[in-house]
Length: 203
Image (cartoon, rainbow, N blue to C red; front, side, top):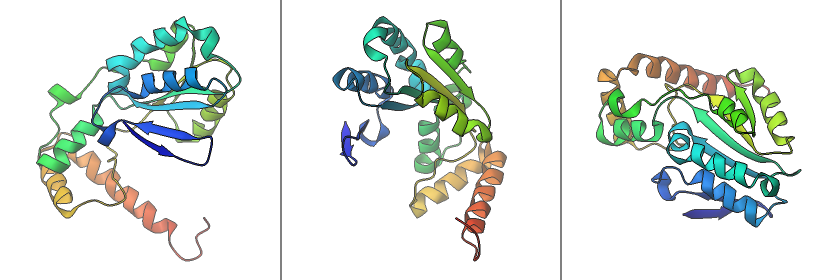
């Protein structure tokens, strides 16, 4: 586990190099037990949430009286129906296209699942609804599963990418089932990024 500190009393934890699937949910539950008066937010991919997170929601239900309260307790699930971290590692490190047989996962209604077991579920599939969804989640007095429908073709590009990784990702895209969408949306991202830095553009 890699832990970093922000201005007190904020703390962060993540799996070392993002190489362990599923720790975000139990980390968050442990943090809530340790600090019941602190806001706790877990950011979890849908693959990890399917692997262990959905079962851990039953743990949350079991201890609902101890895990509820005025401080927000949110499980933010990014639903793109893909084991995305591994998919992009295959593209950028090995130069291999996505293999749907191992990377595609079922589309599960996570917010509805939360409601089914007695937690609060919030679903957001539009950028314009993000602020409202967060406001609702952070004002809840019980644990929340906040499900965001996100685009599988948007690359999780780090601030700095190595030249070799860029070359391999481009090579993989030629044979990738999502190659066209990735190229179009990647170009759109870059154009938007450049437009934001034009003279006279308001921040």
